[in-house]
Structures are given as structure tokens and as C-alpha cells.
Length: 347
Ligand SMILES: Nc1nc2c(ncn2[C@@H]2O[C@H](COP(=O)(O)OP(=O)(O)OP(=O)(O)O)[C@@H](O)[C@H]2O)c(=O)[nH]1
Image (cartoon, rainbow, N blue to C red; front, top):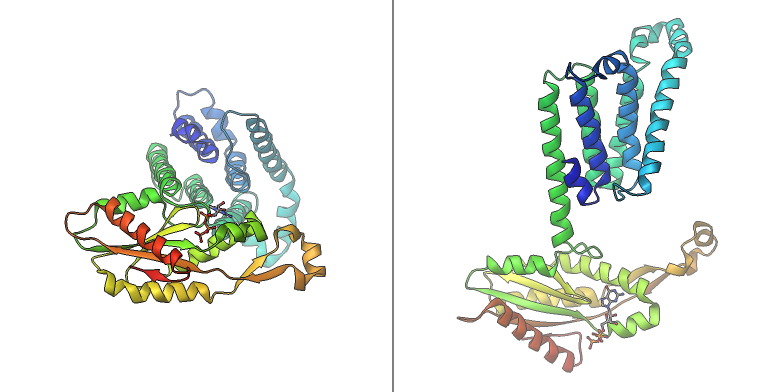
């Protein structure tokens, strides 16, 4: 699993795998460091809990690269911080012992309390970042803390296999999104459209959607603002009604597929989508003024309102037509929509 994750630049998962691997190995009597591991258990519980949190804060980099040096330094820092915490928390514990209310919590202060804090920080990070790797690091931290506090009555080997399966699942899900989701708009890609085309029945309608005069838009406002507009238009398109599914076909072109629907049924949905986009006043952040201080000082000038229109070509599958042929007909209809002056739907 470590090699698999490292191969695909999922270095944080690869590092987490290594930690679990060392942990399982240390549970074997035959391994020379198992005694040392047992003697320093508190320190290890704390360092590894902190390490999972630190992993959530750093980026995935190539596993075997210059970045490995910084990872090693971070790991040493985690170990050092944990070591000094355990050494100096005696004073905290003696303070806690003087407060009646806290006296019962005394034994939790050295390890369990800080580990729980690291876990909580990880939970907040995973909720904030919406990153699957961070979520899986949080899961790792919880499993680690439960196991090391003897709450999980499972053997180290079972836990390791369980964690490896979770990591494998996460790497596969991430690759699925990498292959089938467009990075900029979050819409499914042309590859996903091809996949869908294999499962379509004999009746369906395809619409090709294109943003009008987008080249001029890019030339006027710049490519960065063009990107923001693409994202916003994609959000509108993703909300298409009537059971339509929208894909980014490429560039400023999108495809909508309506399984089991003929073109008359789809037409009103596409018309209302076109109207929605045309009346959508998009608030665009001026890319040249991203500094916080500048934004505060020039609040009124750092945003601008723009709008665009779309043209749509629609085609319904007729007997013996392949998906590519239906797509071609929709493309021809789009060409007619452009010729008719844009901002309209053509069959
Ligand atoms: N910002 C941005 N621009 C893109 C992206 N993909 C394609 N484009 C731009 O979209 C423009 C498409 O231009 P054209 O194919 O000439 O079409 P158009 O200007 O929209 O004209 P009509 O389709 O005839 O209305 C080009 O300038 C591309 O650079 C992208 O991901 N981001």
C-alpha cells in the first residue's frame, strides 16, 4: 500500500502507511525495537497523534524527493514536542492536583488530553478542507488513539489491514475523481460522458451548450476572470432540471444528456437554462486585487458584475444512430443557433 500510494504521489497516505507498518512490526516479539516501543508507549502515542495532525497541514509531494527532508524534520519536531510535553507536564499535573474539580482528570493530562486535542484539530481541518486525505488522517488518528488506549479489542494485524483497506479505498476514490471530474468546474468530464453513453437506452436527447463570444470575453477581462465565469456558468448548468446530466465537453463547451427523454420534453428545460444564464449577473473578483488590505481599502472596486449568454444545439437519438452521431447532430444544431444570432436553442 505504501508503494502504491507513493507511486501516485499520495505521499501523506504513504507516510501514514509506513507508521502503521512500523507499529504492527513493533507488536511482534521478534523485532529488536519492540521492547523500546513498549517502554516509550506514551511518547509514541502522543507523537503519532500529533504527526497525523501535522500531515493534514502539509501538501502531498513526491514521496522520494527533496520534500522528504522537510517531512523528516517535521516528524522529529513532533517527536521532540511530545518528549518535552511529557517531561514538563509534571508541573501541570501538580497544578491540576490542587484544583478539586480537576483532580479526577489528572491521569488524562499527559497523553489522552493532548491526543484528543490533536484529534479535534484534525476533525476541524477535515470539515474545513473537504479533502478526503485529511478525513482519512482523522480516521487514522481516531483508530490510533482508540487502539493505543486499549479501547479497540482487535489485534494490531487486523487494525493494520483495516486501515490499509480504508487507504486503498481513498486512493481509488481520488483517482476516480481525477479521471472523471473536471478540475476547474467540478463537472464530469468527456470521459465520464463516454462512460454514460455506453449505458444509454434507445431513447435519449443530447444538447451541446457553448458560451457565446467567450474568446472576446477572455480578451476583454483576462483568462483568470474567464475561468471564474466558466465555474459560475457550470454551477448554473449543473442545476439543469428534467433529469438532464451536464458534462464539460472541453473548453467553453458543455454537453447535457437527457436519458429516456425526447427533444420536445427537453426543450423547455434547456430554454429556461439559457434564460437563467443570460439573466445571471455574475460577481467577479478582480484577480489583480486579491490582497486583503487592498480589498478593504477599495471595497467598491475589487468586484465587478459581468454576464454571458449561451447557445444550445439539441438532437434526439433516432433509430440506429450511435452516440457520436447524435452528438454530431447536436453540434450542427449548435452551429445553427450561433448563426441565428446566439443566445438561443436550436433543434
Ligand atoms: N478562461 C478560459 N478560457 C477558455 C478555456 N477553455 C477555452 N477557453 C477559451 O474559449 C475561447 C473559445 O473561443 P471560440 O472557439 O473562438 O468561440 P467564441 O469566442 O466563444 O465564439 P462563438 O462560440 O462563435 O460564440 C478561446 O479563447 C479559448 O481560449 C478555459 O478553461 N478557461
